[in-house]
Every structure is written in structure tokens, then in C-alpha cells.
Image 1 (cartoon, helix red, strand yellow):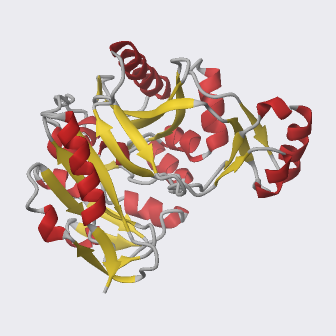
Image 2 (cartoon, rainbow, N blue to C red):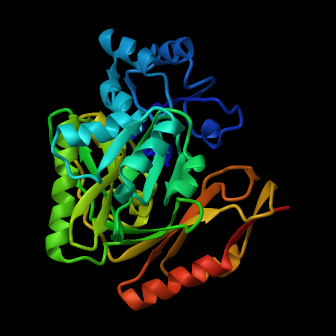
Length: 364
């Protein structure tokens, strides 16, 4: 999707990906197969481009730092990626910069979690998160009481007090090298009850103006605290007392902004190009209320992907499917998304339910 936006501007985009059959291989100017976490591979790849960016945080930051020191423009900056790669550093960053977030403690081992449960039983329920390498809901474990301590990770992590939240929100914010900041409208996310992944979202969020202003201000403050150049997705909790707290951030185009490809004047993908090329930010106004439904591989299906119900979906007005070009499906793998638009909010929600019911990703 980032490549598709770049093609509109005649950008020559080189891609490094570990999968020789990656969906982007036919869209980019030059495709290189290689590890994102290997120093030499990332460093050599960076020699051949003018501006280097990422679409996943799991990348060799040491190589990016070397490239930056040698004069390459690397956005988001390696210093930002290094903090966000490690949830421990990320949480401490919020605390150090007076950005609102849930209470937390840093842990080194499972035994630390067990000891803290004895010392502070009032802190629970809590979520234990791996410091590094958690992704799409992996690396997160709920700990309700001492009975669950065995589920904690026996590795460096962060133990975060559970938030009694009303809604989960997100704001995509962009910042260019000149410091121009722009936000997208706040969205409301609904997570899959078991997978810790976004199931669907609504844009704009059904919140008061006061809460919206809080969310927007926090997103701006967070981007400015990082000094990021590029996009920053700021995931937020709205608790039942009306407080808005940062959950996590992602320094790239994000699932919470996929609907902007049809629903907003400027998509998050174009906005990312604008930011890293130091162009003025685009207009983020929404055309009308929208929703985004993630398409996940069906349980029990592994193999060549087949999209059942597509013909029915394409008869529905204001419904736009986007498939990610992944040849193989497997249970709960992200295979695409559907943007849904309607001026009437009741009709929008009805369409979302129809989309969820009618399109399935199965194996042939």
C-alpha cells in the first residue's frame, strides 16, 4: 500500500524483504531478498537509496545508525526505532516525558512477576509484555492473580497494570523534518477477544469533543517528544473516568489508518511519503464516516488463499476490499482489509456486520 502511493509520485522504491515471494516484489523498482535484522544486509541495502524508511520495527538499528552517521536520510530516525522496539524503553519514555500511560514496573524474569504479585496484589490484574519481539498480539499475557504467574514470560519485560477502559482509540500523526505536524481523525478500535489484534474500527470515534481533543493533543505531544520524522500511530485507552492513556505506538503506517486509502483526502501512506521527503502534510479531512474490517485467515485453513464472498461484497455500495497479495493463508493471518463508508452511522454498522459475515479467507 505504501508502494501504491509512491507509484503515483513516480518514486523509485527499492525493497528489502526476507521473503523471496513477498507481495511487493512485482510493484517495486528493485527487490532484494535478505534479513532485516542482519547488520551487513541492511547496511549494504541502505547504500543504494537516498532515503531509507521501514514498515516494520524489527530491523537492525545498528546498521541504520551507521547509515545515518554517513549522511543517509533514515526516517523514522534510528534513535526513535530503538526506543519503540523495546516496550520497556517505550514505557519509560512516556514516564520521563510526562506522557500519560498506565502504571507499570520493569521485570527481568518470571520470578520478578511472582515476587511483585506478593508485594503488590492490588496491582493486578495486569498484562505482562515481552520487552522485545512482540507483534500482532504475540508477546502479551494477562496475569489476573498469583494463579496466572506461571504464564508470565521468563525474559525481560514490562508488567503493566490493566486499564479499566471504556474504549480503545488511535490517532495517526505525521511530522516532517521541518517540524510540521498533522493528525488524522481519532478512530475507535474493537479488538478480537482472543487474538489481541484489531478486528475492526470506526472513524471517527464515537467520543465527546473534549475526549477527542485530549487524544489529538496527546498524539501531537508524543510525536514531538520523539522528534519523529514520518508517521506515528498512537494507540490509546479511554478509561471509565475519562482519562486518555497511551498504550503503545508504532513508527510507521498502521492498521488503525488503513481506511484512509478511501475515506480521507490524504491516505496515511501518502502522508508518510510527504513526511519523510519533507513535503507539507496533506489534508486529512474524512469524506464521510468509515469503518475498517480486518480480513484474517479462517481457523482450520492453511494453504493457497481463496476469498469467499467477494462477489457479494462488490455489490455493496461504499465497500472497498483490499487484499495484500499473500498467496498462502493460515489461521488468523492478516490477508487484507475492507474499508466501509456510509453517511448514516446505523447503516455503517450494519454494513460492517454484513462484511464480517459474508467474506471469508479460506484455503483451496
